[in-house]
Image (cartoon, rainbow over all chains, first blue to last red; front, side):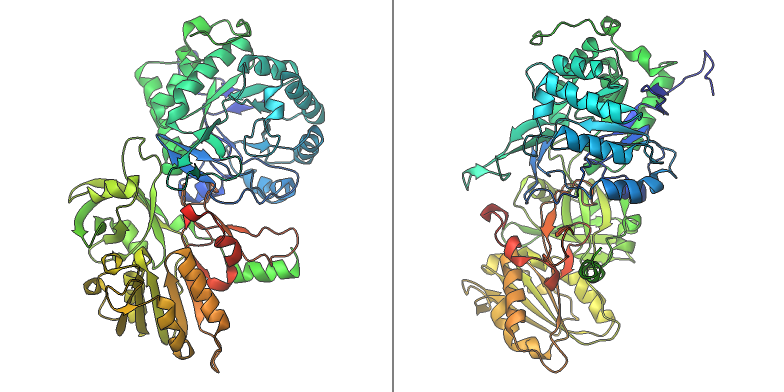
Length: 322
Length: 298
């Protein structure tokens, strides 16, 4: 199907044959494996689904409390609770195969060997449209190592790249000195796209008991509207650093938020925390973006991009300009 | 799955059916102020009211703005199919509930529900005790209505720390045969805890329904485990437990609850309050782990 030059084409090409019907997807960890939302509000409207982080073996996750509300945001420390890759490949993928929306499995591991083993189990499984490499989970021991060290991130991506032909998105952590270095490193190592950003490390204090609300180190990952300006700035910098598609994430709660990320250089977006307080959020965002496109006579969403971002891959490393 | 795990899964039962839930724009019909910071808040939400069962809950979106960000979870206290009105029994204790305390007739909120798994309603009538602590009384008016419909004989042990935190007698449905009040400070009814009243009744009961703070529920479980059961066996115990929830429908994984660690090697002993609960058989929970959670969560 080829869109004519005069009609609106909402599709987004993430590379390696992964063509999304529209740029609105849902973020890992905010949509489970899709089945709850399928029952509540349907999934057919989405451009793609990014699954809950999946590890080699089942994980029970962290002890409660696991979440804490903050001003216009929330902290989470779930600890990668998931049923393990075998259940995902054997039980979930056949159900996804019946959906029109592509499902990308978010993959996490403790070391490169585990990443590769998980990816090998998912490779070639019908119903799995691609992978998102979670090199940046803040809630498991050593989870940030791959995300903060460009060379380590590149080694992990290269090893996974060699193990699969599936489209490969790499999810970047904002908890780094220079996100552009990591973005370039994973692009060079074979990533088809990057998603930015994962949660920001944050903490909440319970004053009466004089302790953090979350257990362990007392911190978790901050998400929600509170991080949107930070995420937009990160997306602008990542867009200027790499040539591959960028998927913007961070506090998107309505269509205007999503469109702002497209202006900032994102090719697609992930709706995250908004899925928790509004099961219809992603549907409303898809519809709102389409209405905006009609109203403004767009032919492609990429027309929205800030014009000074037209030459990606040009930003030098270093601290962001303020 | 191991044989043990399969048996456990069968006992645990299926997860809540999300297809029954609707997200309805509801209009506030009344706010009834009660003692201290307690109140009953009612909404016209006909689709939710038609579906709601005792022990199930709703996720209420308190504000259109991003503060507070998450919906608030409340058990249905009443659900009237004819008028389409659902009511919730609340205390103004946090950001969300204090905002709800400001609601008045005509104010709108989105209500998503029913969610979770509720209390079992018996096919044949028998004798039940409803055991509540403080705000834990919330789901019992609706439960009492449904139990009355099957002809159940009910005694309600209504407990709180003091008289100002006690669920008001005048709101208890008429189908409840006997109400006994307990306050820890003796300011109303009998001085002491509800467990003191429950012990002597156990041998004559078919069912116990309990809702309140986790330590109270743990005490009920312990009491029933120690007591000698009559010829018909021990009464069946269902508890409605609370855990901080993000979404209410199983995707945020925030409301983890420790289940009895007998699921078998390699099987998860963590459940979600919003899908496997909030009402569970008392014997399915790992009370030792549940009661060692940080004090600020109790």
